[in-house]
Amino acid sequence: MNLAERIEVRQGDLTEMDTDAIVNAANNELQLGGGVAGAIRRKGGPRIQAECDEIGAIPVGGAAITSGGNLKARYVIHAASMQLGGPTSAQSLRSSTAHALRIAAQKGLKTIAFPAVGTGIAGFPLRECAEIMLRETAKHFERPTSIEKVSFVLFDKDALTTFDEVLKELQGKRAKPN
View 1 (cartoon, rainbow, N blue to C red):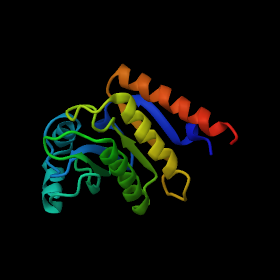
View 2: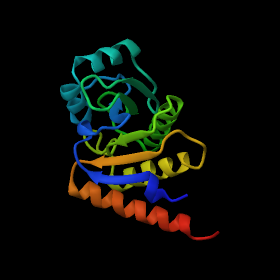
View 3: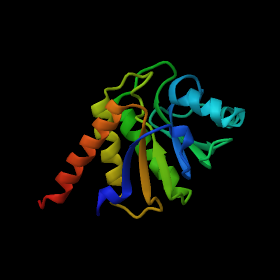
């Protein structure tokens, strides 16, 4: 499998992505406060928070799906990598990324866009985030899935460079015979 055909790393505004779903770097209370969640709330409108309120709290490491409200994306998948006001851990990031991909596949979605979950307000290290999220995505593609393309839409040049480097390393490891 060629990861380069299925995983895209790009700089941009996640809330402007015209994909089946975008992923929110969420807290387990599904409160759309600052950072990525705040941008989703502002551009997507109050419907997304209202749907989150109906769902209620979810486990850290879990994920939930709502409509995309006024966004171009049809859905928002809320990947809860932290408690409200708490940090992101490697395990919660791994689990919430895998869960978001499973939800997208269960819905039959073809395209999904992620931010660098946990690296903003939660303060998770960028390189470790890239390693975990890209590894989980590659692992997801080892099984049958409806997902055709996963985009990592990164806000700044540093994040773009880091995700790009990690993706190239991951492709290199997968290309070598065992």
